[in-house]
Amino acid sequence: MNRLYHDSEDWVAQGNCRSYDPEIFFPVSTTGIGQADTEQAVAVCRSCTVRQECLRWALRAGEAHGVWGGTTPEERRYMRLELAPAS
Ligand code: SF4
Image 1 (tube, protein in one colour):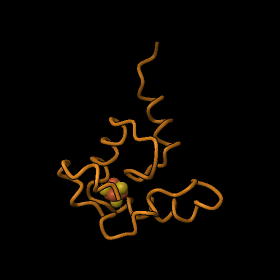
Image 2 (cartoon, rainbow, N blue to C red):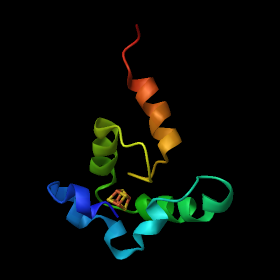
Image 3 (cartoon, rainbow, N blue to C red):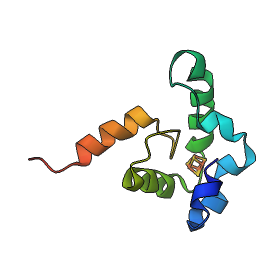
């Protein structure tokens, strides 16, 4: 999926997603027409041995699109809010 941008990250080569169509990791939406792809991508991530590394990378990078570390963009936005220091 993200191999074009993140080959410099060691964990990328171990991702389960290397064996799947990259399109499912970048669905057009997380509900409606893109829901089936989103669910399939999240299921692939669930058993991925580098899921934590992938999620950490996506949170650090502020990745706004696609399924990373088993999370949707909406879930990561929520996680970033939860992790942000209280002002
Ligand atoms: S957690 Fe998901 S997106 Fe990340 S490397 Fe694994 S399969 Fe790919």
